[in-house]
Amino acid sequence: MKKSQKLLLGRNIFAFIIIILFTIIIIHEKASSILLPKAEEKINTYFNENYNFLKGEVNKDKVKYENSKYSMTLKNKSNKHLYFKIYYKNKKTTDTYKKDYLEGKSILKYTKNKLEKEINTITNQKCSIEIISTLDKFTPKVQERIINEDNLLQLKFYNIEKELTINNWNTETITSEIVNFIEIFQNNNITPKSYTLIITDKKEITKSIKISNITDDFTKNNSKKEIINAIINDENKELLDKEKIEYTYLN
Image (cartoon, rainbow, N blue to C red; front, side, top):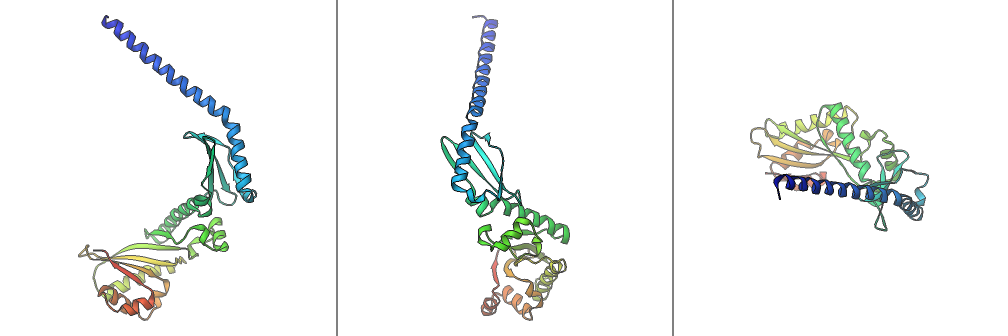
């Protein structure tokens, strides 16, 4: 076979493969559209049988076909970031209600990011936020405030974590730095449940301690210097147990 004939044959085979692929895609898309009403019916039936109690609480998005399955997103009417999905695939219906809606995975992730940005803007302190529980473990009043995004910086449902670099590794300096840090938040009416602080020696960065469960009361605590002294010297566990403060040497 001549070279030109081989080239022509190769082009024809390639064109044939492309046509087959496009045909498969078109058939697949048409099939998914044809089956959409059935999938929608299955999903709505599943919702009515399992989550009818949410009827006045959520809005239903249209059923979509993506990633080889049909899905409907159901969003809380008060906050679109609280939602869950119902999936239909291969005659099976599943949902993400427990993880995304009951435990609030989606809204708590959104809330965490929002609080971190707000705190950074207000205090110029870049901190990490840890929300202390899943949504279902909070009281109904706390849940309502989270969903309505009601003055969340003053709601004690989160912890603040921050690394502080200390110039002089001694009780006086460390205590003063912690007090000054907490007062920045107090002065801006930001009231987390507690602070987790990683204290690092600027002159010896391998010297680092993680102190957990520090509260706003620390600034007024008459024993605060004794507490820090006990931590950096790894002694007086009775005092730390009494104050419910925990610490870990990181290096």
